[in-house]
Amino acid sequence: MDTSLHTLCTLFAQLGLPDSPTDIRAFIASHPLPADTAIEDAPLWTSAQAAFLKQALDDDADWAELVDTLAARLQQA
Image 1: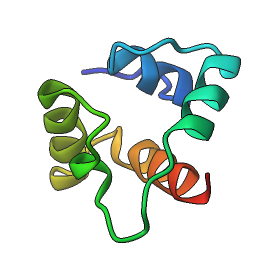
Image 2: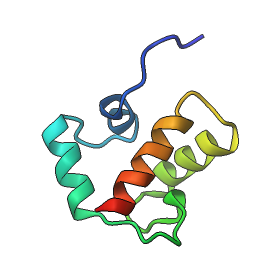
Image 3: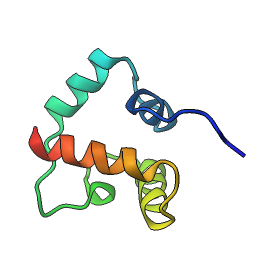
């Protein structure tokens, strides 16, 4: 069982993206998400990243809250 603490940094690492706080802020600023677009449907993801995000949300997995947080932050960009 995975008992590690999930953060935006660990979510970005899981997605294979640069995961420093500075990198995350830059990513969010440069990838606005329209309010009517589900995060997993955004064109910025690879198919593997989109599948991970979708599965996290569909399964209400440990990552789901962070995926929701990321979606909200992308929509505010």
